Picture 1: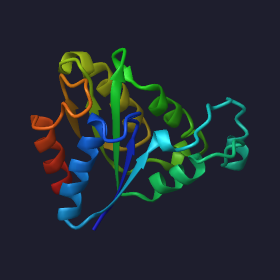
Picture 2 (picture 1 turned 90 degrees about the vertical axis):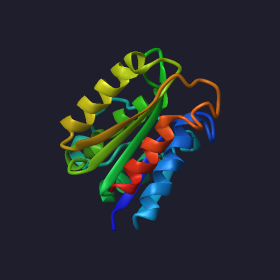
Picture 3 (picture 1 turned 30 degrees about the vertical axis):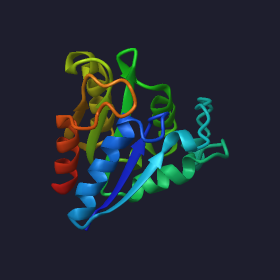
Length: 175
């Protein structure tokens, strides 16, 4: 049994990225794993101040939800990162969260990582977000196990009945 943590940067509850997260969870739980979905927009996460105090203390000076998120990420076996694309890349909530990985960046490796990327573009328009996230998480020492592309979806719920739904379910099931 593996512990799966999903970070969803969807600003819309039950938006397309969230829907794919839930489908991933359905598969992962059927396979006997435990899952925790963390909706980032429900968390208080401030911007990194680049003070680098965390290099000395291992903790951020900001008192918000990020310390708890980092602990859950560290304790997970599998990490799922889900984001809609805004102007060809991850949205600001996810970028802010990743910037706040700084206090523990050397301790965030060794995970199997799945990416869920949604947007109104085809894969060619979503590719930059995938490339960036792959580079970030591989640089941290993780292995990208798969990317689920929620292509050509914009309005809430448009991802339903697409091949991305099947891909998310089977990715979770395959853990």
